[in-house]
Image (cartoon, rainbow, N blue to C red; front, side, top):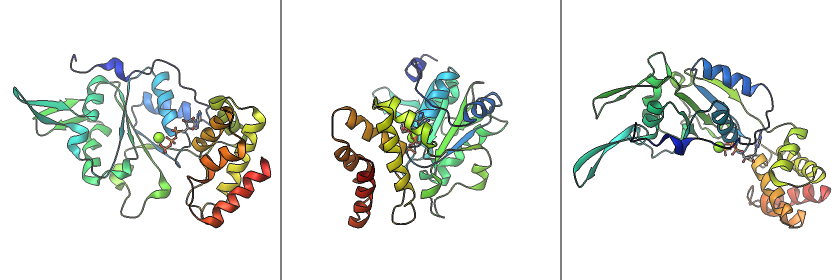
Length: 268
Ligand SMILES: Nc1ncnc2c1ncn2[C@@H]1O[C@H](COP(=O)(O)OP(=O)(O)OP(=O)(O)O)[C@@H](O)[C@H]1O
Ligand SMILES: [Mg+2]
């Protein structure tokens, strides 16, 4: 195992995660059953933070892969590299995770092409194996290995969705923006702003979230609220902070920007 430096994948400090339902217990049970898990939910609602927290809690190393459409099976599984001494096999992140017993987090899995996603199939059923065809090796996953994937259900077109044969290999947890009090607690904790300011930021977000589908593709995420709070905590005036973090990133439509400006001005 010398080839793999497990320590670099360990999460040594407890990540701050505010649980919003039963997700911690459900994930833990799924992990004990070695059932692969799929996290669904909009951008910036806490999926990545949750996985980091669970990896820390379960004391497993975490290997995260950001998926994209150019990704090939070799990017996940591994490939031969040419170096001065000839060719050398290099494990991809999925293979490394399977060997060392890490939690492998495939982020935005639908971005990957379907011929790429199928390589994980044998890892997700009773076989728990990963064939390295080019190398002629069958990797048996470490008993602690766990696979978790995320995707944002809103963004998929019909062309870009997971095959049923992929979907039905996972238990799924739905994530949403936390309810108001919990979200304010998160914003206050992450940024150091006072509760009153955090509450107001959350109220602005609720206004914007009501506009989803009525001119906005997506509401203001918890992540953006944390951005707003962190500027305010640095001494930026709340309106300017909100403009930069809650309005400008979201839309270029002048009318929509004005509507959002008004929402901000209602509270700040
Ligand atoms: N339940 C929570 N507990 C603690 N922090 C949270 C929680 N939810 C959201 N956050 C905050 O929101 C930020 C964004 O969350 P995160 O990166 O986990 O989103 P995500 O769902 O993975 O988004 P994406 O789909 O864009 O990757 C975090 O960095 C954290 O500050
Ligand atoms: Mg994420």
